[in-house]
Image (cartoon, rainbow, N blue to C red; front, side):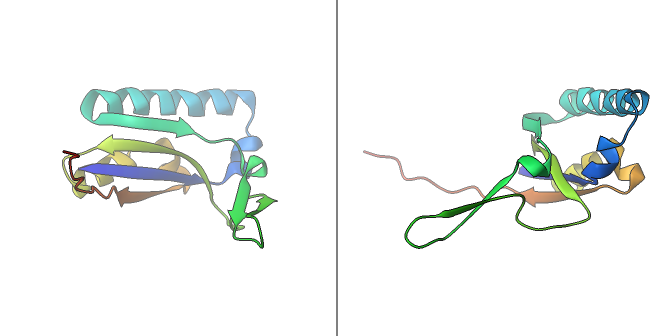
Length: 122
């Protein structure tokens, strides 16, 4: 089953890290990603630019309305994701729980991917 693991953390805390702290944090993430790729099929994964670079699009009249910034102001921001193929939800939970930012209060939202049956053209 495919799962999207959305990584939430306090981006202000990361922006205030010393170079040494950032290096240590990145080493933890590198180790995590190596372990994840050895044990689970990773379909995609990326880190995101800070929320100050976000653009939110809403319905407008007559054209869509684009505004600077994220959809909502929150304590934690979406910082990245992994799309994995795991055995089941319990397996995805185990891998989410191993993410380095969990120990410092970060969270992971796990969402199963909807699979649609497609009719073949013919």
